Length: 190
Image (cartoon, rainbow, N blue to C red; front, side, top):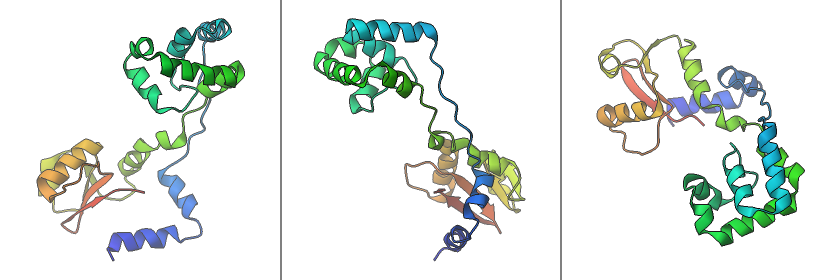
């Protein structure tokens, strides 16, 4: 078994695993999304008038659409799609009317999901110096270094580096690229 996988399993089996994990991924307190009064008034007006198209369009402009539905992503991307797809619009509108205004307001005000906010937290932890080694964004420095070093850039850049220099062949981004004892390591954090 890989030495790093062994260390991960050992760490996960410690009683204070979550206390250790929160050092890397501090969970923010998520506040609700604000809806301005004008938007609320428009939503109510279109809801009361049963104006399907206008109701759907104003809700598509919100950060969160109140219904989880596969077609919503398409409607958000193509602003004219609401005019071209009356069956979908009618279906979504019926669902919205059955929810009622209070639930619509509650759904579009939901705070960001924590898992949507943790992406940069691992990078921030690396940048804090917690690993006790040099940190770089420079590919040449990463390649030429003889000391322990971490390439701490973005997913795409780490993947490019790993593909060009380490034989990485997967499409997925990488959370971690480092060199320890002159041996390169790549990781995906879970």
